[in-house]
Figure 1 (cartoon, rainbow, N blue to C red):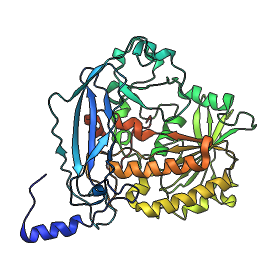
Figure 2: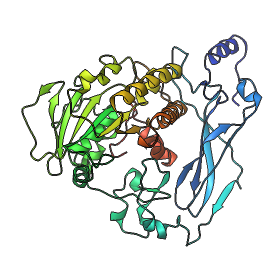
Figure 3: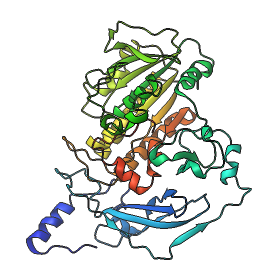
Figure 4: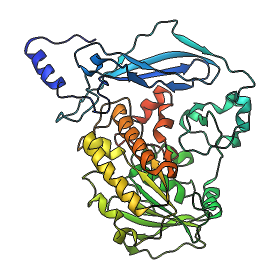
Length: 437
C-alpha cells in the first residue's frame, strides 16, 4: 500500500476516504482491480472477474480484503497474469463526494515470475481453430469470445468479418458469427422478420438510445460508408460526433424523435423528425426505425423519459416488431445506484405495458477503464460502476422478459481487448466507441 500522510493531512484524507462507500449489491467490493490473462504467443487477452471472498471481514473498510476469480481459457498458449489496482477504499464509486478524483494512479500488481498457465487444445476439440467453421451459427448476442489476429486463422477472411481494433477479429468460443453486408442485413429484416416472422407490414424497430445508438444508426443508414476507410481516423469517428452534420438524419440533441425508412440500395433517410415531415422519401422501403434519442433514465432528458412510452406518444409511430433499449451509460454517469434501480423498475413496468409480445434487445453500458472520469457536469463512469449497473439491468430484464430478451453485450466485447487498446479507447471523454462495436 502507498505511504499514508500524517497529522492534519491524515485526518483530512480519512474524512474524504470515508465519503466513498461500496454499492449495496456488492458490500465487499472495496477495491477496483483489473486482472488479465494474456497469451504470450497469440496476444489473446482474457479478463478475470474478481469477486470478494465470502467472509464477514469483507464488509469492513479497514481490514485486509481478499478476492478470487475463475479463469476460463480455450486457446492453446502460455498465459501470463498481469493487472493493476485502480482504486482502494471504495474510491471507485463516486456516489457521495462532490468532486471526482482528478488523477488516475493505478498500482501495478506484483505477480510471481512462474505464475503462468499453459493451455493445450486437442485437435479434435470444438475450440481448436481448425474446427471453428464447423460450429453452429450464433443464436445469442452475448456469447463470450476473444479478439484474434486473422493471419493465425486457418479459414478464409470472408468467414470472420471485417477486422476492427488492432486489425483483430472477434470470434465467439462456442459458435460462429455470420458476416453480413449492411445491404444484406436490411434485406434480412424484410425477408426473415426477426422474432416476428408471422406478422405483416413493414418491419419496424423501436430504438431508445443515446449517442452510441446514433453512431450505430449512422453506420446502418449509410450502408457502412460513414467513418469507413481513411475517414475512420477522424475525431468524429474515434470519439465525439455530436457536432457533425449528417445528411441522412439530424441525430443531434435538438431532435429527440426520428422515423427512418430503410432499404438495401439507398440505406436510410429520416422521413419525420420531432413530428415534422421531411420533404423526401425512399423508394421500396424494406424496414423502418423509430429512434428516440435519450439520456437514459436521468434528469438530463428534454422531458420526463417516462412520457415517451405513453400510448399517445407511441401511437404516432408504426407498431414495433422489435424493441432496442440502450441504457446505462448516462445512468452510471449521473444517477446514484439506488435511484437507478427505482427508475429501472419503472421502465420495466412501462415496457411490459407498451410491448407485451415484442422481443427486447438490451444494449449494455459501454466498457470503461484506464482513466479518471471527466466532463461538465462530472461523469461518474468507472469500470466497476458500469459493470454493476449493467449486470443489475440484465438480471432484472431476464426476470421479467425471459425468452423475449436478447442482450447486446458491447461491454463484454470491449473488455477482452488487450489493455493497451482499452487505454486507447479511454481517450474519449464521452466514452463512445466505434460504431461497429
